[in-house]
Amino acid sequence: MRIDVVSLFPDFIDQAAAVGVVGRARERGLLTMQGWNPRDYAEGNYRRVDDRPFGGGPGMVMLIEPLRAALAAARAADPAPVRVIYMSPQGRPLTQAKVRELAALPRLLLLCGRYEGVDERFLQAEIDEELSIGDYVLSGGELAAAVVVDAVARLQDGALGDAESAVQDSFEGDGLLDCPHYTRPVEHDMGRVPDVLLSGNHAEIAKWRRQQSLVRTLERRPDLIDETALGKADRRLLAA
Ligand code: SAM
Image 1 (cartoon, rainbow, N blue to C red):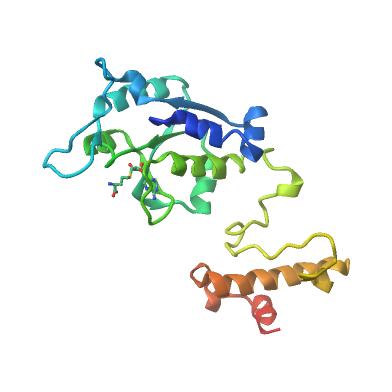
Image 2 (image 1 turned 90 degrees about the horizontal axis):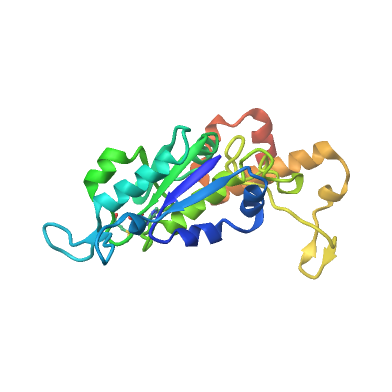
């Protein structure tokens, strides 16, 4: 997969995506990334990329032309069809389902805004979708783009080893939260590992994990679960 990022600070995302699972995915060629700085495409001595908003008010707005040129250069860098996404607090919320959808595409292009944002005409003309990483406002889209890169990269085939498998992660499968995890030592002054996990009984372990996931999801994120739609086995686990 290839991800291009249009940003005034492309090095930021490059560095954020240089370590751990994402860094390894890039080393293995599972993910290719390239940054495109609109300033490199801006004209004049000052290479201006922003200007004051029409109608007055605070802040600056990103100019169309440097963005258009940077986007055109990025598009031309690879013939694969590209989904162009503007990182924006006004976008649809990023979910694991959306991450899965994006991870299956050959190419993404992430546009990072700064200041008050981007001239609306550019967004209307060039953007396929807007994505938000939450109901709060960041000073720039780079952190949000780095979140998308990380979440998408770890789903590339071969990016995760067995030890990091995504199968049982929260929001995967039927959308529940993950169960709690324990490792050595069995006894610790912070408590003991639940006996069932030491039993070697795989069916019982699977039941316990399912029960923990159900309880956690109901307690922490009841919006993720429709209790009335649970099957008999799940209802029995919850009642136990
Ligand atoms: N004036 C804009 C608004 O209220 O909708 C906010 C602009 S924000 C200061 C600058 C840039 O940060 C945005 O153009 C966007 O690219 C990025 N950004 C801020 N919050 C974000 C969020 N929650 N998710 C994704 N991107 C975000």
